[in-house]
Image (cartoon, rainbow over all chains, first blue to last red; front, side):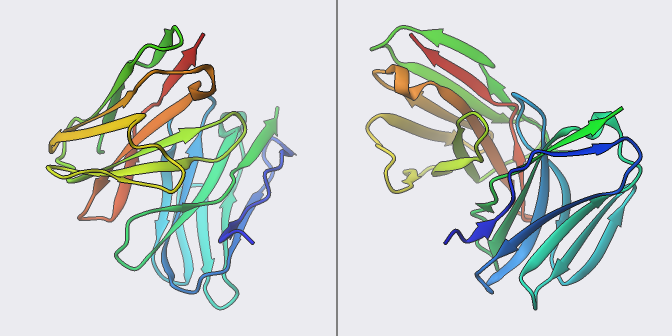
Length: 111
Length: 115
């Protein structure tokens, strides 16, 4: 069993829809949680960074962490074609900065 | 925000040659840099952790004699793929760790094609 599970998709939704991306993990020691966006043939770009359980909002993006369920989510409101990319979740244990990655979910926003 | 550059962005080489990839943190000092490789439609695979002034720590299964890493300064790490073979063709990405915010900032990647 992988430490971090993420559905690779693809996930295809119409423009304007709310997108929900998720990861589950097995190690309760993970404390830092990140979401990265990666366009084709580019390096990952950090979107959201959370430490504790709860919600964190940044513009159209909301990151949600539920440590009790070992489940994290990224919501994208008013999705746009430019949001089409691969979204990777990543997490670390306390001060250990080696990231453990999900497989990435390919998201397609249809105009 | 923090910027990390990689050079070259794309390289094509013949089998048996060596290729050097540079990773630079442009506006911050990075005591730690990471090297990843990524195959098409797959996630990032950590190859090694590079600490300034010390030897790199390689992940299991990564040949340290084949993938030479040098982290000579706080803003530069290099990855040299020695005696490259077609199976080394991949997308190589570096990241630099920004300790204050416990964040990694990624370079744009280098696409290596070995003929």
